[in-house]
Length: 445
Image (cartoon, rainbow, N blue to C red; front, top):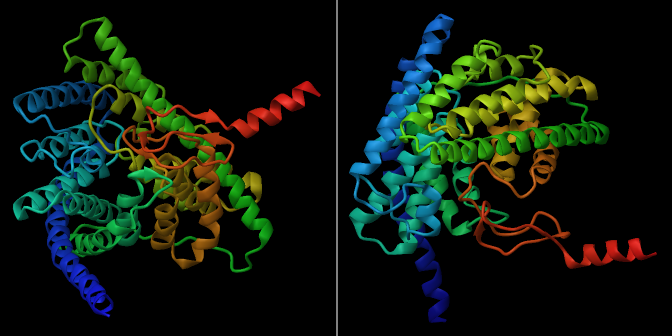
């Protein structure tokens, strides 16, 4: 009887605890992210009007400044902790270095201000994780509460930058591991995400709204069509993820073999980008949000648009510029869905909306957050359209991720075997014994 009375009191205390901690954390993160976004909008507001020759000069210069900042900024810090938010949760008991908090946001401003092709959410999640970790240290909480505060900060950062408070909050938790969500992280994440979003609105951060004409007479056949768009977008996400990791590996090998001073590697990346924009449209540089908006408005997009955006992002981030990896997923998804929609008799705008959500689901391995993002961005009528596409894309991308530190908790197919709780970049994927046995029997017969 005593335990029956104590348990609801403990749960009530837990809810009240997270109301206080998450609101404070969300308010801090929302303010920090708003300051970054306002600076970013001011810096990149006139980038598209620059002449080509100036953009070709800015890219190598931005690469060199980026390289110098990252090299000397982290060299001056004597802290051995990684500033990766996933490493903080999985390996560092929720601890992150606070002295280097400013480096990634400033580096992202340089990257995007000089025209590098990247996203804006990376520094925002970094700000969130760092401030959440700092809150935990200030209060002297234990390791489990510290992890929850970091996840709360990450979710608040994503919610604030995306303008989707619930989807951003879920994304910050779901992205930690493929196939598993820490439900004990959800309450602080959602409270922090909603608070950060409201605070960012208070500070005047603008958020886009989209009006997509979803059909009211939804049919099973239309659902199957969206699943096939998801398959195409899952393959586009594979290209994006593979380009990104191959580019990082190639630039690291180049730096090692030529014994390059590290700041010179992003300089070389900037030179390569300058050469490529002699052939590729400059629309693929920077955030490329106008391309996403045009795709969602129904304007025709090229079939290979996703390829060019993936290539420029891979060179930008792989060579050593710093920036986010999710905003490019928005662009790649919208462009891909728009370009291939007519093959299935779907309007380009509807295809773009479905594609945007599907690529976020697959490249980040966050299908639940992606589906909720579709609802928050495009309205409740989008749910039936984005759900099948998100899940098919999530499977088609396979056991790869844009985040090399993301853990793999469960295999996506019963025909695949994994060793759980290893980073996705280290896990060796194997076919299941049952499938191999069946195949050998078929060959024997």
